[in-house]
Structure formats: structure tokens, C-alpha cells
Image 1 (tube, rainbow, N blue to C red):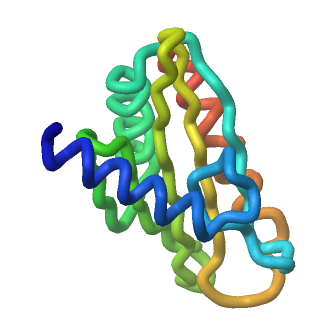
Image 2 (cartoon, one colour; image 1 turned 60 degrees about the vertical axis):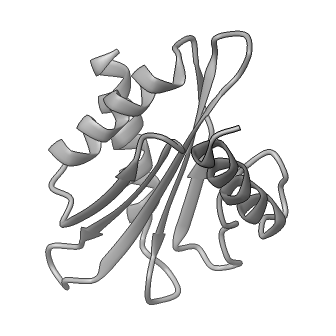
Length: 134
């Protein structure tokens, strides 16, 4: 098997082991109201879903982005305009044998207790833009 396959499996194993919900391969949200996770499914192959979500993220004014299409992950950093705080968005795209894919998306503030709903609204905005693109 290829190195890419093993890298993807290792990444997913590490993510699964650090999460309290084994079906979501992202770090769980803390017990503070400054994080939001969603995992919608789509009737698309993972490579197409990955390309579309990466385009959406890039169009939303991200200040940093690291993406790896081979393992289906994106890490993006957004800056809150008023105060300049940075928020992290992590995305993993999973392919299923049925041809469906699941998009796991987590948006979280780096600092503070509450984000006043910023991360929930960001995830909803990302998913709305993605659905418009599809």
C-alpha cells in the first residue's frame, strides 16, 4: 500500500483517539461556548466535495490555509475584524463506499470563553455557500 494511504490512516487514527465521538475525526469542542462542529453528508465523491469546500474557504477571506487533498484535510485561520482574534477552522472529508461523503467541520476560537455565536454562524455560512456551489 502507498505511503499516502498509511499517512491518512495514521491521521484518522490520531484524530479518532483524541475525540470523544468516534464518528467525528476532529478534536472535540471544549466545555466552553466558543466552538461549533457539524458533520453533514453529501451525495458526492470526496474529491469533488474537497475541491468545492476548499474553494468556498478560500473565497471567505481566510488569512491562512493549509490543505491536503490526498488525506482530505483543511486547516484555515480566520481573523475577527473588530478585535483581530484568530479562529481555527478544521475540515476533514470522508469518502464512503456508497459514493457518499461526509464533511466534518469544526470552528473554534483560540482565546476567550464565549464567541457570541461567531463560530456557529461561520460554520452555517460555510455550509450555505457550499450548498449554493453544489
